[in-house]
Length: 328
Ligand SMILES: NC(=O)c1ccc[n+]([C@@H]2O[C@H](COP(=O)([O-])OP(=O)(O)OC[C@H]3O[C@@H](n4cnc5c(N)ncnc54)[C@H](O)[C@@H]3O)[C@@H](O)[C@H]2O)c1
Image 1 (cartoon, rainbow, N blue to C red):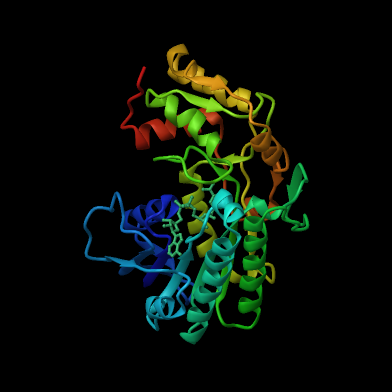
Image 2 (image 1 turned 90 degrees about the horizontal axis):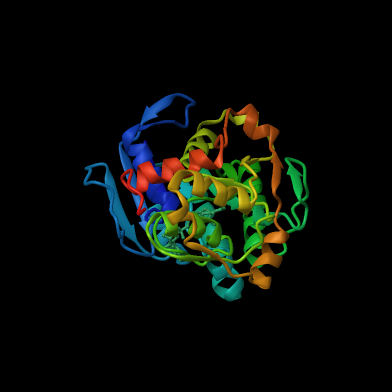
């Protein structure tokens, strides 16, 4: 199989690539498990931390907004595309034109290039809980009423995936993700970035500001579970998905106070005391508009499990990203 990951050097793209290389089998177009022989990682930027050298991997640098580039990327040998390239929430809100160019036109380029292959490749599109607008509790049937440009771009992308699939141009699947915590590396422009920072920075010896109240609840999922969910959605039987190609992933819903308590229990007082409260009304009002409880029956039926606890999320981060060591 030839598999393409757009946004392939980003946080989730890189992790998915490592997961596929470690277990190089995916359900192919015929419905049976097939070996991944070629993995193309497409991104606007060269990888900062490339996966270990591997003859199956090819890096391609380019702009998802350029139709010719995407046509060359998704060719007649492509079986599956994981489409991750995106401008994240804060970035899309700050630059309306860039957000629509990358998140909407870029996704359209992926769908059109896939359609032109005339072999109905699988497309796994990444959506977000930003497609909802104001409901605290959501399920598979909650209407999409986004309140940000990023959410609108993701909601439109979901509909395009459904329609290209209905027409038989692609075998599309959408994974709607909660906030990913703990995000490794540097903070990004996502409005939810603080939820990772308040755990990641103290564990690495840095102080950090917490902009929201301890009672604030967030719906979160670890990168590890997100990567598994992508594989599960990719491999799901077509008839289980039916006409609605979107699967809403469940998460856990701790308060920020509970997240900080877990940090204290694992890292001790010296680590937890590196978080200082610095209320930010804008961030608080954005987060207050997000759902914090998800009841995704479709994800459960597909066997897609969220993390067991915040403690599990933090311990996985320490083991996988910090080599098991905390800056005490
Ligand atoms: N991380 C989260 O909490 C979260 C939650 C919900 C949905 N998502 C979605 O998951 C996907 C991956 O997110 P991530 O956290 O890995 O983000 P990321 O920012 O780490 O990765 C996105 C990648 O897209 C690339 N990109 C941006 N513009 C591009 C362009 N014009 N051409 C080519 N590449 C371009 C970036 O260089 C980056 O490597 C995104 O679609 C994001 O919207 C993420």
